[in-house]
Image 1 (tube, rainbow, N blue to C red):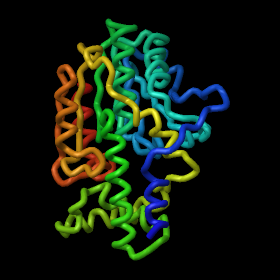
Image 2 (cartoon, rainbow, N blue to C red):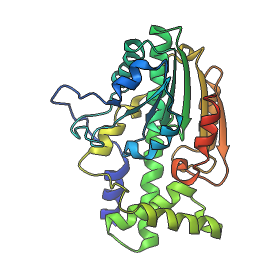
Image 3 (cartoon, rainbow, N blue to C red):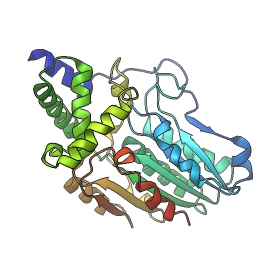
Length: 294
């Protein structure tokens, strides 16, 4: 049993900070020629332990006047794994993209931790490029402190419960079982159709599901754990919409609604029967986001 709690801690709980030893790489990837001729852009930011591959549906939003860009997290998509996510640095880089190409509009789509980066970037853009129209679409957004710590505790408990259900000490088996709850909520087994969908999701994505290891999860979330959403009034003028699973086990509905209520002009749509992975379980979210681009 001691091993299970060690596993849960490795996957979810806080740890000591690790200092970056080299200048950070550029997290952004985009076609410079397309960006140069565009007057607007759609930029997508994944959540912790996730590749930009889950965000490629945004390619449908590209036009001659609208470019596409992605923000890569450390350890994914050829970005060095030794680096950490720095929210201020990430926001500043996105704001610099807007300034460099004199964009008239930017739509920033962020999943989980990526939604937090999107909000901080929107603050910087509103300050530095006040004439640029800024829209944020937050998917399964992470929340300010202390919620990331509480999410870690929920995750640790969920991981131990998953180990009990699988009767296994194999880290990958335990993580895949927890992944089912992550996708469809803690009561996934109570609805047969939902349980079947969870099984199908795990089977389809087994080879792509990354097991947190080598401190990478810590480096992705270290800055998030101390984020307090400073100066929310700086978001005034930006259009902010959230899409959130109604049974998200990581960032539950009530604290999420309270957070959204603190942001000027923000609104939220809760998706019934879905958890933290609505990018995968509810692909219709891209249609909802696409409607905001018109």
